[in-house]
Image 1: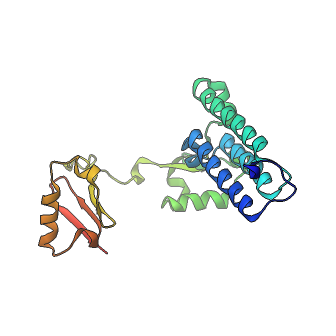
Image 2 (image 1 turned 135 degrees about the vertical axis):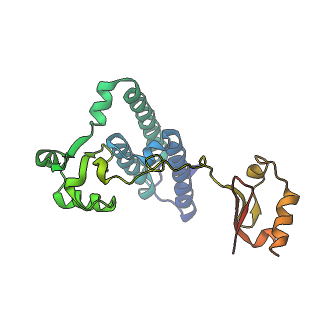
Image 3 (image 1 turned 90 degrees about the vertical axis):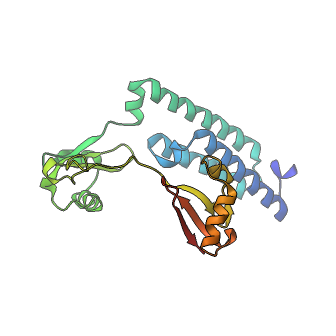
Length: 232
């Protein structure tokens, strides 16, 4: 464990061990913080990402610094982050402090220029985000909001919305997500056991296509027990 403490110099093996320890400790810290910090990089998450990266980088580049202080500091910051997330869930005032309410950018087909400046975005960026949503005309937008995570949510006026099956009174079947039975040449027994099917049935189905399990990239089954096979 000499690599863990400050040294006048480190061997190549000790540098590698430091990198391995730091990598897994950072993964552990990220796991504790939860997927919110990955999928929704908001103000609190961004500050944590920058701080943790900066703290863990120093002992990985300076042999005169031990890892103990950095890891203790990171553990404290992760604890403070979790407290901050908990407070944002329970205390509305604190939530608004770190996650400001959405800012309306377009309302009833009109761009609110003052809010563009407040959100610090340009008209070009606004139009770019609208194009990503397949929206050609600003006047067709009933409401567009600048969300706390930096994305733009757009809602069209009713006449410009795509009709749904309910709108045109078309009967539809309940949603069903196909079950993956084989993935990358291996049977997924966990998913197979959720169905009423057996391994022998699956192999019999594959034999009708003259294909082995190891040659299947993906095999799924729908609600009618119809097997779809995607070979390598």
